[in-house]
Image (cartoon, rainbow, N blue to C red; front, side):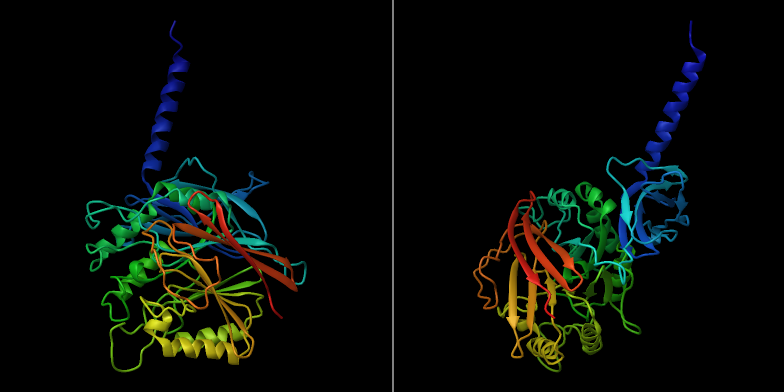
Length: 441
C-alpha cells in the first residue's frame, strides 16, 4: 500500500532542498566580515545576479534571540555586492550568523561567526589578539593571463591562514592583479575583483575573520601606476565595493587612506598610489604620499597612545636597496622627511607593514635620537616569488624568505607591558621565523 503522507513529505523535502540549493547557487562570493567595533559590525556579500540579501545573527550562547540586518538588493552596477550592517550588537561578544538570499537561508559547510571588540578600557588589561598579514594575491585565469608558466599557485595558503584563527586579516596591497583586459573599463575592474574574491579556498577565511585592506599598483591600475591614472576615482569606487573598511580617504581628499583600532593598537592605512607622482618624472617635486596624507600621518602618530603604531603601506619604507619601487629609490626626499619627523617627534613603537616585493624580510632602523623604527615586508601570498641577492643594510639576518608565505602578528601582555610577536609561515602553515619586540615607553 502506498504511503501517501510519506510521498508528500518526500516531495516537499525535495522541493525545499532544491530551492535552498538554488539560493546557494546565487551566491558568488562571501559572506566576508569587514570592520567591527563595539556597537557595529560590517558584513559583505556578492551574488551572481540581482537578489535580496540579509543576514540573521545571534549570540553564540543564545541562539533563540535573533537579530536581522536591513535587507539590501544587489545590483549589476555595483558588481552585485552588498554591505550589511549588524547594529544590534554589544561589546566583547561572539555572534553566529546566517546569510539569506531572496528570503531563503544559504547553507554553508564552514563556520560563520563574527566578533565585536571588547570594552576593556578602565576595566581590564587589553585582550590579546592576532592579525594575519600578506600581500600579492594572484589567481590564474588562463584565457586572460600572459602566456607561459602560470603566475599564481598554492591557493591552499588561505586554508593555512584560516587554521591559525586570526581575529583580523590585513591585506597589504596587490590583493588582486588587474590584467591588460581590465585596466580601462568598469566591467574589467568588476570582473577581476569578482574573479579573485570567488576563489573557493578563500571562502572560509572570509566568513570568520575580520578583513581590512590597502591597495598597491596591481589592484589600483596598471603596473607601477600613480596619480596620473585616468581611472583612479573609478579604482577607488570599485575598491570600496569589494572591501569593508570603516572609512576611505581623508576629508576633502580622494584615495583610500584610513585607520582602525583593535584593542589598544592603532592601524594606519596609507595610500601609496592616488597622490603619487610618476616614477619616471624628472622635474618638479616627487611625492609618494603627498603633503596632506604625510602631515595627517605625522599628526596621527604623534597623537596616538597605542603601545604599537602599525602603518600599512604598499611599498617598502626602510630598505636601503635603491631599486624597483622602494621608497629610497622612488622618493628618497619624502622618505627622509618621514623618518626625520618620526625621530623629531619622538614617536616610539612605529612598525611599517609592507608588501609589493614578492619576498619577505624584516628591517630595523635606530635613529640619531635613539628611536627604533621597524619595517616588516610580507610577500607574496599566491603570486610569483622574487629571488633576490639585493643588499638591504637594515635587514635583520635570517629574516629573508623567498617563497610564498604569510605573516601573523600576535599582541599580548599587560596594559603597561605589551609585546608583539611576528611569525612567518609557509603555504602549509609551517613556521619559518619568529621575532618578539616589546613596546618602549
